[in-house]
Image 1 (cartoon, rainbow, N blue to C red):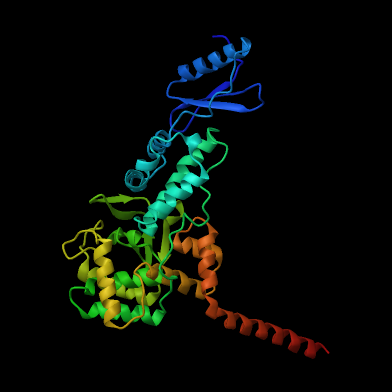
Image 2 (tube, rainbow, N blue to C red):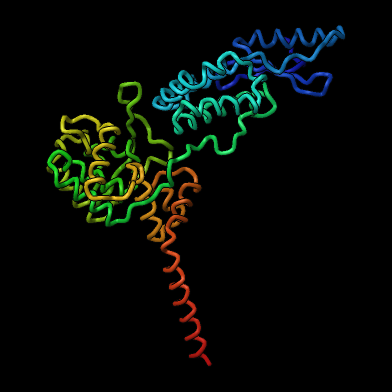
Length: 372
């Protein structure tokens, strides 16, 4: 087969083929095809037009956002639970507006208009997730050189706006909440779960996916999976990040409560759920949220959200003087950004740091006095 010299064709992660060449205008022109032969045929046609001097700059891409979304959702590197989440976001919040729009016709103004309209009927978290998905889909188009840059440029749009800033519970408040759960036989089985979330910093889906066999000697918990309810079914998969695979050591007092919990509420089989419902199934987040709020209201706790138990575990760990890397490992973070937030949140340690510096300076001064 003769060597081809005009343009190039490469296979994309989606399985499609990208044909590219540099035109007389000095720009690289790209088009995506399902079949490799079609990609080479297009290049041959463009070359013929060049030789006949009838060449005209082709459109950057004829593919729609919907076509790119289809490829994105079919990626092999997506976890199943993530794929189901993204498919729902695309179907409910993006497809109606964007499915048939060519990627090279998506503008920052168009994205801004969609976001503003969607904000009136979409919850903050779903809106932020949908925006991030649209941005990720269009990033593929940028990588394909189908568009020069990503039109998703709304600052902060990928982060949901909380109704109020997160706050960490104190250790005393967490213990008081656990005690309240323990007072009622219907909620007593969730006392250990609250303590694991508050002092271990696990994500809710990680904690509720734990098995008896994940409790290791020395008060350690092995985190290897996560569970979530998606489209009416339980989906068990990998933790949120690769760093989510980890072993977390609990304080001895919390480990003792967990041992008691194992005896009273967990079946003997190694694969038995560590924090099951009374019927032995996975605990739904909605049920847990209701249980948590009732306990918080019963003890007159100021406004607090169930997710803030993880915030509590992170802040308490930061308050011990843990380094950024240590926090990342304990919390299962893949980047230092989130861990740094918790370090900064431990502002009450600033006085402790100042006292430690005073002690250091005092020791230096005394040493100099001794020398003199």
